[in-house]
Picture: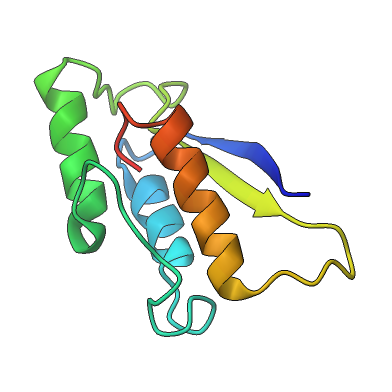
Length: 109
């Protein structure tokens, strides 16, 4: 049984930059962890330019406030499985995609 966790809220750095968002997206696209990108995907944004797309959307809606380190830039979601649960990479990414399409379809993911 898969469990989704919203484990971290990303904020601008104290230097008024959105580098936390870029760092998180770089982490989630790590080639070593994602089988050279096979286990990645994007919804409502371009995978290679997700940070720029997300920041552009925040700007367009007046939600980008890099002067406030308490402003939320994004959520980092994690999918977890029980230890020993035999889940293939393909099944895991399928579950993640279905979750995102069903519950986060109006967001950039």
